[in-house]
Image (cartoon, rainbow, N blue to C red; front, side):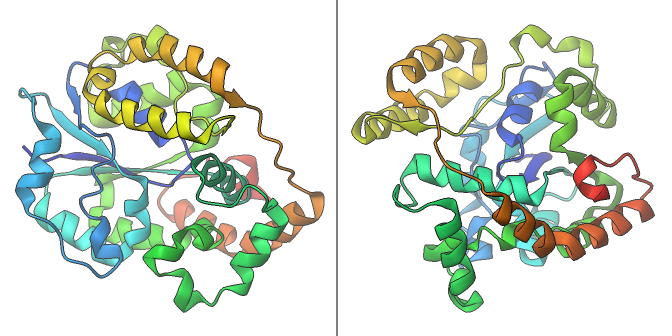
Length: 297
């Protein structure tokens, strides 16, 4: 079995939570792992692996209406990924969630800090300086992905590409709406998918994948490995994960102390201003007009 429902982006915009919520529905079968990343190699100019490897992510599928996966980096693959995805998965539907690019970048930075991909001594302002100093030809290399963060907030051209391939089978949502009311947000997606939201137990809809720092890097690496090994259990019974996560985070996590200065906030606002306007104009053409505040600045 291959998927017919994909959550493709953007990173740090609630894709893990949306995957978990939809996976509570009896007509949706979520992949293991949540992010198979099958189409990622195309972004880096590499070959895809055998399709049978992708199929293994859906082992256990039993005739649900949707087989779903969520790899948020697909969005940035643009034409290469969208063309190949449409070729291999012709009847698929695609969800993309947009977030204020300024806030998304800060969240991305904190997430990479928590994974140890960014040196803990590097402040957000210093991280931005490194991003701006690196030539774009170097940023687009796989090994430098962490410093491509600023470009990850340019949505307009990518949205046009995905819409040209998927048309009405592309659903554009906003992270702000998810935060405001996750039940209403999920019910609207269910309406689009033509499945009954009432089949989801809203009491089990918990927020997933918050970024945080950890007291022990060694223990965190062990926890990541442990979590991956139990992905199947978490997908089947997501409510079981909550007490484990709570206890672990209580023991090993600590609050983020990253500082987002007013200067950086204003500078990034100007940096994304034109693309936000272009994105808004494009979505208006597609009869989308109920925009969050950041799209109206």
